[in-house]
Length: 288
Image (cartoon, rainbow, N blue to C red; front, side):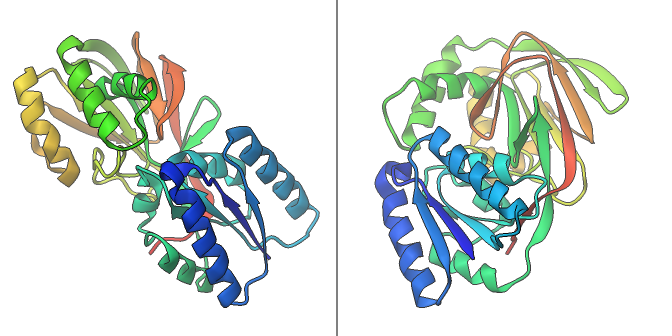
């Protein structure tokens, strides 16, 4: 049996439309499933918690299909990490970065993966919370803070928040520990990647691997604001890593200390210091 959980309000209502398409397609494929709709984080967490309890009692949940944006995927990931229940995410939000990271097709074609065996992928973990893509601090976290205060519900708000935040931004000094190596660096932007992208396709850690039990650390040292605006578009191709002010490292455990706020997969983690670690084979899912 499959379990379908839908956030109908994700993507400005795209979640409800995609949920109906998925439901109709599952019926056409003669799949047995239960369905729940929840537009609240607490409702989704409660439903998934009950589902896990049922699975422990051997009621045979074959997979969870989560329809929504990155927020829904994050909730499903927290619930299903380090369990035997596979997660199939179907995008219906704005960013959809977790789906991109896995290489899963957008929309109904993703359901074809149910005919294939799921595999395990690594997750990152910080403050007892899992993340599939990026943990970040610095400029982009401030942009997230500003964007979350905006009433606009589309990708434009992040670009607008960046434009408003950049004139006010000042780099900070950070202390890093990557496994056993310690160093200090002034930085504008820091990203710790389990996956490759955030912000709707920005390949901030383009060489991150979901199967190496390592996290990729990207540090952008201070540059002028005109130079930042010149380099920033390269993030969408992952080409920024060749810039002389960009430093890339890898480690299974990364600690960052400073006076700043951090976000993971678009969700506020809290203030630094933070310690992130790779959790090998933490999530049962599919990749294309």
